[in-house]
Image (cartoon, rainbow, N blue to C red; front, side):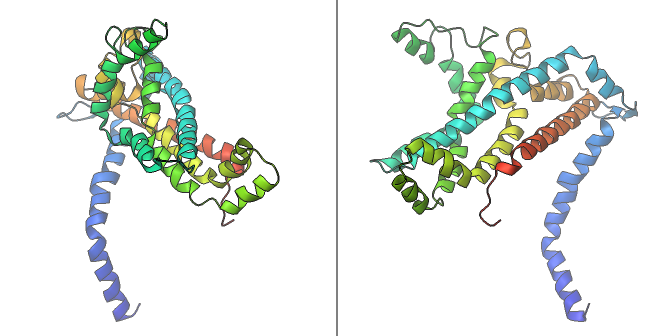
Length: 295
């Protein structure tokens, strides 16, 4: 390197040094620290004691751990496909030429802007067994609504319904992708006599498949880390028979209520591996169905 190149390099490193320090202190160190603590008996403000893989072996015999994992995965398997479906269908609907389109777009996006705590408090009243607006609406059509938050059969469905209400973010991403689909493709399909839904299946979905894939991956990551809504609506106990005790809630309880930080760190790494595996499976199963225009 010449003298001028070294000077340019040092100036560049000086400008990005705050980001490098932030990455090392705020990201890399906590990740490496949790990996070490996961192999220890660690209580905050005390010296960690090395116990090897005991925390991981303890998970195999912890029924609450398996209950929380089952609740989280079963919720994700329902919420992710429904979230993808509804966000896509709403985006397709709002992409059509109609009066007040911008107003409807704003209305459908607004729930995504509401803080999670406020969302949970709103839906606590919506799902109320006696005074909730949802059961009131069901009574108008002659249906007796269930006790959504008390009956363990309806705790996870209630969270799924709430997640669908907040698909505005994914909807906007799909809507932006729809703007880039060439109009000529639809015109050619119309000339060939293709119906609206055949155009959606053979043109719209393949053309925005990278965006659908992105929403799928984000849905996996967000769903498996769901915390605020179940914690506020059902508390740390997870509702009736722990039917709404999610993995992140149980992890939080181990770390900050029980003081078992080592076990919580081990749970965090198990969750990380689950997310990696599910992301890999989603990527492998869809890689031949994703269309990139540049390829």
